[in-house]
Length: 164
Image 1: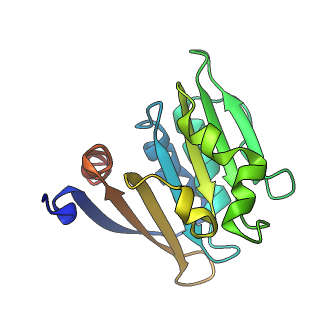
Image 2: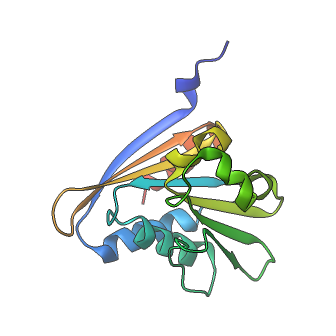
């Protein structure tokens, strides 16, 4: 049986202001491919939405990416006709509620990628291979960002990020 750790890569970064957090997101977004799942974890106000905005910009949407807290899912598109879904699972009380927003269908949709804030609330629906990003407060504007690639595709993505 293959060792799952063999396809795991982790880097830790520090951003010193929201602009750096956004720019990190741009670098991540430039690497996103259809089928990718990016999980954004961290406390309220840790910078998940700032990072998501950068990811959307780097991915290529012209729309402003903001938190879908009240609608739960935002959809963005780019010129190639591909979609980026941005899910905020914060208001979901149980993982089974993920079905009410069609999360399993969205995850399997061809030609789309997925950003999920508060992914721990829908963990049973997440694919084993994914990019997991945890943001933690260090100081008022300083964030510690831990990026973990789970699976060969995401391990390569993290290795690429470590070079930027």
